[in-house]
Length: 76
Image (cartoon, rainbow, N blue to C red; front, top):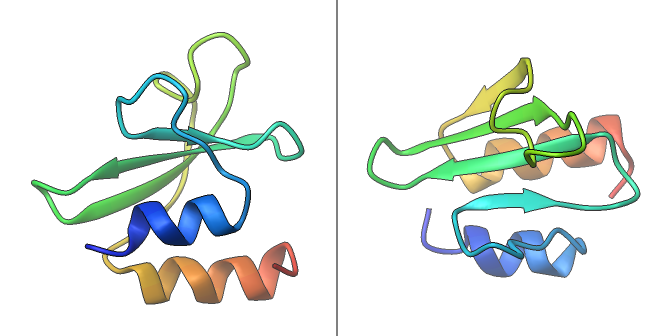
């Protein structure tokens, strides 16, 4: 989990509120990171809450899993 911030920034996902919710204006998702729980959650971004209340789409337990999802689903 220690490389998650660098990985997401390299894909243009930003944590603008510094609350572990990453958004990218070009995607309809938000990525929530819980390092305490060791979980990364991809959620629908409702637009006003950066995914806090959005529907959970996928959960990942490693940056590698998230990276594979990126490559297979959004070509990044």
